Image 1 (cartoon, rainbow, N blue to C red):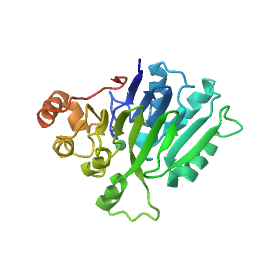
Image 2: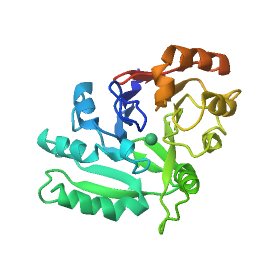
Image 3: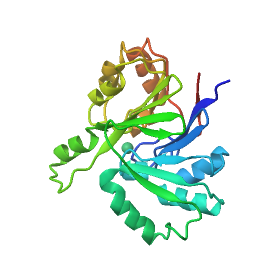
Image 4: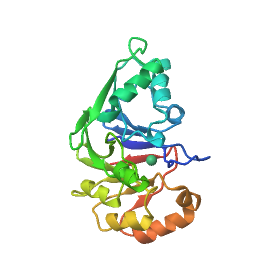
Length: 261
Ligand SMILES: [Zn+2]
């Protein structure tokens, strides 16, 4: 029997919330396990999941906004004090490699102090990474480009944010992370998806569902809802049902497990 699931450790957006953690998900596909994004309090949420701190082979970070990255240090420290010895790969945008390495050093999360080997690896658009038998392909989203444009920023170096196609033994899962345009999702939609984890923080349900409607997607889990949609959840669910009548969808809470297959 297949035992594939996504554990929602944090479905919150980038705003402080009394009832949602920031972005973090555990993917368990076949024998592979990895954490996607590490918003705080990911370490506590991970502990609550009951999984062993040895379980993930990798942590993948879509980008370094605080709501996706802010819990990373504590998660790495948690693995240390919980007795992890298995090597861990940390995948992140290439431009973040050296700054994150420097922060890890300041936080004394480096070899030889760390009892497990931590390998920092760059993500590159369109270049799949392998985690066990799972293939994770990052695609560049326009999230940071659009943000810079909107705020009139002229960064000296280009920052990148990724969305992901996750494939495992015939399963195809899309994970939006943060979008710069609902059209960013199209790269995931050229073949049918079994599941799409889709953010609803930066665009209206109307804008996002306009792209999803009519697509071959078995199920959509809407996460990262903007505070206004989350605080009016019954109305948001009704609106989503009206906008997306043909695609089963849900709005999970923290701790919820989405099973596949
Ligand atoms: Zn975000």
